[in-house]
Image 1 (cartoon, helix red, strand yellow):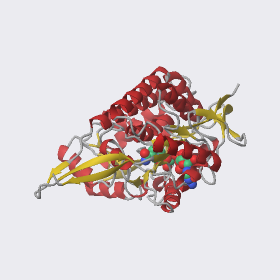
Image 2 (image 1 turned 90 degrees about the horizontal axis):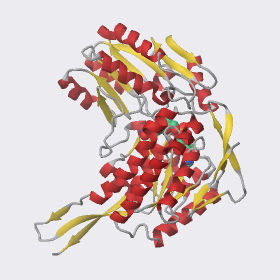
Image 3 (image 1 turned 60 degrees about the vertical axis):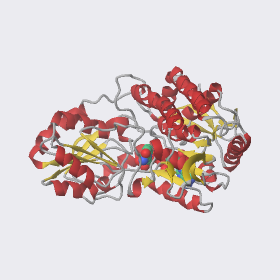
Image 4 (image 1 turned 90 degrees about the vertical axis):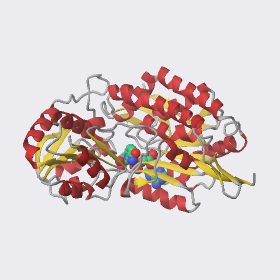
Length: 473
Ligand code: NAD
């Protein structure tokens, strides 16, 4: 039996005006598990109108940060209380292992609301007593209506990363989840109403991107901010659409993360984190360490241990708590990833196609620098290993990409860690670890990996209109 998920607009769950719908396929069973309202320009316009009303005349932007924060904490409580249902929704929509959805994505989604509620409540503002006797201080006014357009790889976690700061700062939101992962967004909007968020404050409209609900949101002049996470090419299309109304856009885009293992590294830690960096979420991670560069002196030992660890990762049904690698998110995505494998140059040390839409952890060696699998974002469990001889060469290889989301390095040499971190062209550099996040720190990318930063004060800058108030007093 399939489950139905509607849009959530102006405080009620609805079907599309013309009753259109689409289906969500569980990529492990390859069976339809959910039917979802399919929105287009009409539904996007209804959602923006609701968000506009809630912003222009509703209580949300006018209530204090304490009151808003209390409601967002209540929503976080409800996310925790409904963790099983939320985790299952993401797991069935895109094949994420249930252990990851329950252990990481859902708790982090609740934490997003708690963190940004508290951040807004405790956030100081600058005040400048001027030599002239004037005083200048900064107010952070909510920006207005925020359109949040999300990808499918960490559905609930990335949606809440956008929604939480937008709401905490008094904006109203229209969320367009990815068409492959609609379910948890409707569940979240239901919980928001249950938590007491007023009608129209958090709206969800389902649909596709081009010529559909996504594009309509980016063209709507009543939208004050667009926050987007997804592919770099989509980021370009959204920026072009937004330019008609000069709508500010925040872009968190693709990546091709380099992972540098120096000969002086703690190899146990380097193997452990490098495995996490590429095979978590079956490699469908913008931050994936998909280009491994290993200093020649430890190449053989590292590679042997890395391949052994890759082969020991349990691949199977996402519903099995022991599973670490599930199928890829959809047939379309599986075709894309296996397409890279079919033409891959070099040697495949392990991996290849798995059962159904799964791809086994795949390690490639001797891949030419200009090969597509080395240059493009594969977004699957596929890593290349390339040797280097000097620190300068390692940095040059790591920086030899149009992407610049993140990089990792493994070394026990503190001076080298600082030096290389400074030289890498990336929004985040992790030394001797991976995916460790402080939500106050900037998150975003360089080059094709994005525009702007989110997190802590960076989210505040984007989701507010900072206003200088100057007084002759
Ligand atoms: P995608 O760009 O195909 O789709 C993302 C969203 O944009 C979907 O909701 C889609 O419907 C919508 N969309 C597509 N075209 C649109 C248009 N013209 N106008 C408006 N909306 C449109 O990306 P995806 O395949 O869902 O996600 C994978 C990509 O996301 C990868 O490139 C990955 O690296 C990136 N990503 C980046 C980060 C980050 O934080 N930098 C995080 C996760 C994923």
